[in-house]
Image 1: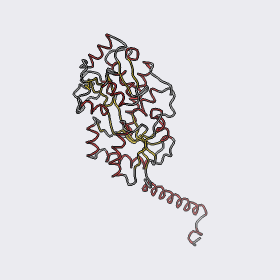
Image 2: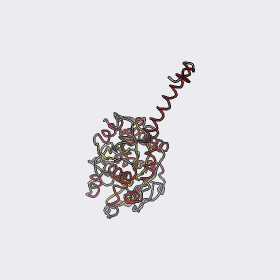
Image 3: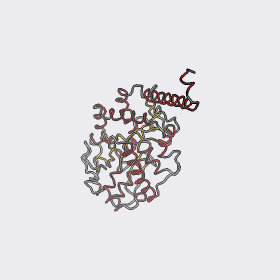
Image 4: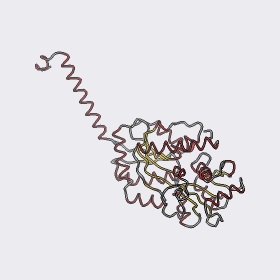
Length: 338
């Protein structure tokens, strides 16, 4: 110990030592934050290849690959309607190395529809919602039904004769068909409609094309090519604004503002407890990626609306949509086990 320190009281020496340790700890913390990411980041998609979530996540990963200093590895972890992949993210270390494309199915539909779910909404940190998928209701192009009013009139005139297809029991499409028809005055669409659950959105759209189902309500991105090829006729989109490529009235045009909550969406989330520095980096990367010209062109062609939300706005949006869906599910008795 040098002579100056020997002259100081013991408490002062201990204080200096504690201060030194604290400064060293701050330096290490700052260095660690500055170094993130030090290795590749896994971006989990909780749904299968080719679906709306997969398309969105992989399209986003292209500009992210130019921005993030380490590789972003996109992996599909499917099962249990999105719950399997979602749980693996929930159970990962909150260090920013395992993130996910949070989605309407995994983070609002599943919690609202399923009686037993192995995760909760508050077990995730939402970096931000970046994409809105308007929902469109459509019929086969040669259908005699030309409007939502005509569709609903047929349901009222002959209950249990009009059918709609979905990507499965407990999916967004399951809720969407019932919610849309109910807003137009059918009190109990669960009883008055025939629901045809299928394996995936592609099969659900094909069912309408084949005449197996009368109509479908699903993400505009899933219908864009069918509408462009004049195979399906859109009757309505659920947004306030028109959707490019969809010559159909909006929910606002039809005086149905409650349907504005009926939209798909994609965001980026991680397990609860992400460090602030990690969240800030991801927000910066996400903002830059969603401003990429190629990304905007590809997503716009699918009917998606790129809308970057703050974490606070994202949480409010997700919570509000969950409450709307849960209320509908409770009132119509649509809750399912699993």
